[in-house]
Length: 494
Ligand SMILES: Cc1cc2nc3c(=O)[nH]c(=O)nc-3n(C[C@H](O)[C@H](O)[C@H](O)COP(=O)(O)OP(=O)(O)OC[C@H]3O[C@@H](n4cnc5c(N)ncnc54)[C@H](O)[C@@H]3O)c2cc1C
Image 1 (tube, rainbow, N blue to C red):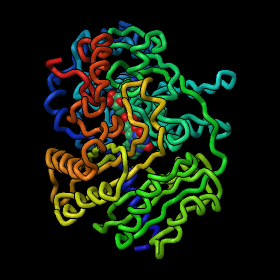
Image 2 (image 1 turned 90 degrees about the vertical axis):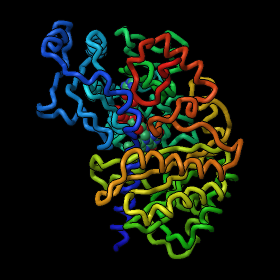
Image 3 (image 1 turned 120 degrees about the vertical axis):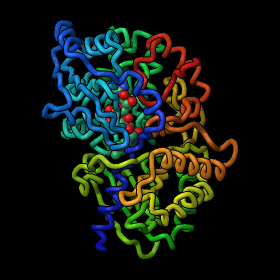
Image 4 (image 1 turned 180 degrees about the vertical axis):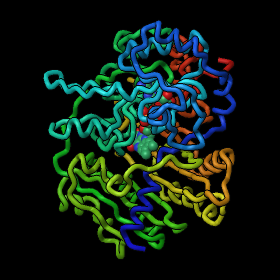
């Protein structure tokens, strides 16, 4: 296999990293109100002043506004409402509530926001408006991050956005997104100064008008309303970046995991970051090291010398890149990953990243390689420097404490030939998370990551001691739990 093909396969697998949704819970919860949408109700929608597009499932373009990333997540929605204004969103929410139609708010669709009835697709709320005098950017949630980076390509500032251009601004920012600048500036939701929100009763409010609302928007925005505009801080764009992929075979695993653990424990320079993957190419475990260094080649090689000193890499594509190229790095090889079969992911967050933790993730992955039910199995280790998350501890519900946090992601995809089912995928991920957590040890395991959720995971595993406060805010703004997609903040007994 050529190095380029190998890279293509690995990056393709890696790029599907967010196709994570289990149908386990949605089948239990969401199909309650899956009756038909009457034509008379559609007439009411127009009479109430909805000015956007109204698409039924047989109409051209419907899937552009409703398609699920993970095919297992598809709930065959009947209707797409595509608002042009915040007022349209308000009309749509009030209308859906008055007919008790289940609905999902969709921005980029990368988390496969779904409903068996109505998708309120915010794709056309796609402004990108930088205001230099205020140092802020007004962002429509319907942008995907690639559109934002394109619109800001000529500026020397950027927003804290997704690490793949396909991700939507709406869901990413609502869940506390990790950008390539996390080590410098914190979470994307930290950068939210204000947000316009359409609440369950249809009112349109600015989050800054209510401390509780602003709190919930920063890390649990998907549960509180439909966010129709973000006002985020603008940050200086890095001018020099050295990045790319370096691949090794598993013979180097012990050495590399020791280097990664040591780098994680000792590095405090926000200009030096890396990701480690253990990914599969045609069933072969392969180590992926992805340095992201803000500086020139000499600085990168002085900061992380072991990456380039290890013998016989399968591939080394590291080079000087621009900020925009960094965001597109994976897409150089993937034009648009297709919606994929049952694909789910789970996150574990640890206080300290040890070789035992990395080994446990590989110990989970290895025996599954020979099982014909699974094809896509991968691990992504995301170390961060101390205090990367700290500014968020009091501004939003996630995370709630701990100066040092690292994310381990596990991914699983059924094989086409001998498919597992969603529940088997779900159970495998829960097993894997258990193994990693056991290796991490009591006191080293922190809350899970909202942007990488395995649906059906109890909300307290994401929001920890902040959950009760979040539930209070939820009941204040959405007492009937109309915004019920993503992590279930309110259960039937609360
Ligand atoms: C390939 C890939 C790479 C990824 N890389 C990263 C990464 O680098 N960093 C990171 O942090 N995350 C990453 N993710 C995770 C991603 O941030 C989440 O999946 C995010 O929710 C996607 O947002 P979206 O708008 O595209 O998704 P959608 O499916 O449209 O929405 C996701 C959730 O948010 C809700 N929602 C969407 N828009 C709004 C809104 N305007 N108001 C209120 N609720 C809303 C939806 O109802 C749904 O529950 C990645 C995902 C994928 C698929």
